[in-house]
Length: 570
Image 1 (spheres, rainbow, N blue to C red):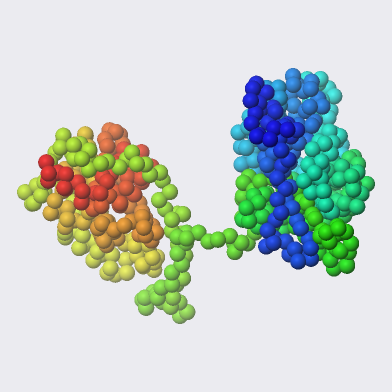
Image 2: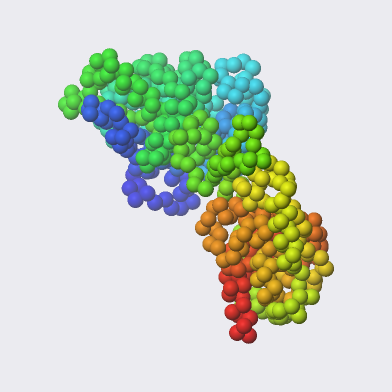
């Protein structure tokens, strides 16, 4: 045994995948929080088959089947599987022989992420329609078609996990002996049933050593599948010698399986849905034994305790969508800053007979600022100053107004006045103003007079501060009329509501026709745009938006607060 768990040489990976060369897989007692029968003398252990190199239980039968068919090294390998079995066959065929010709025959109902996973590991994927979980004995099913293909073509190897005796014998060879050596006092063994290989092989070995050990098989509820296991109706025709091995059968709903899997994972035993199904089925079995007065009869005579083992056969990651589909919203912690629900008095001019308040929910950070941010788009103030000094100097005062375009003081006032008078935009306009900070359109920002081709400067500060000082040739596009104070040095990204409000209004401003025309010219000429604000926060958000629209935008770290210092020093 390789106690130090190190593998060297040309066969290092193959040796790593051989269980004979490694210590036994972990057997971990679950916390009392997950074991309601601990005070009844019941101890429950998780056999972490997920600790195998391929991180799933199916890698053992895959190894056993391939080792028994060495001629598969030069053949195309096919298997009806969309999960762990064919994935393990694909990995091991490369590890053992460098054979990359493995094809997974997969239901067309499989989640796209599962198909991506297979392709990530280099497997070819062939889809089939009809029933997703077909019976091995179906004369017109996918497995029968693969048997016929193998019979016609000697260059095809179909291991046939549902028929292959080396499937269950791999567990008789490895899983059963490991468990018994780790826990000689075992009284109950429990696992979910898919092909039947694990329960048959492990159970057969354990009973050969101690016939009193109870073997419990856990099945899906018919019509309510959990990935991996099957329902008993589809399993009872299995050709493996399970009938003399399985003592009891339990059925578990998919919701219970997913929930128990999540509980295990949160307690540090990271396991997928079929693992949760195994534990839930075991707990149901123990509850029945207790209610029937039979639990004490299962205990070890010497210790008075009942020692149970269930298998953890899969991991949760590829099934995450299923958890959120099967379980209730309250099973998960909420996402902070995801949604805001606001209640607001409706102005009397909008009220109907019954309507005095409106309750609206807005998505916050999951519906805005989804575009990429990149540190490379944030210029050091000195670098920004160097870029500006090669084009035009800073300016201030009315004598330089001709060098910049801005919203005049009057147009700002007119715009605000128009948005607040006459209920412009009706009830919807009022909702946008109150809840989203979106004013009805007034006079458009003036970004006329196309700028120098070498650089465009876009200034998001207030019109008043722009008039006091700005870069010659800069275009002023203030958010103040829509988000008062939004650009004035706030800690933007520390306030989810502010991010949502500023982002929403930037979308509006950047989409105004005259702004869009200038940005269109900028894109056509490949002209970079330097975005300025007070402290660099709002301009970072604007830069992200512009970059997402194909504009080569840049911001300045610290905004004009830091840029003016550098320019003044020069």
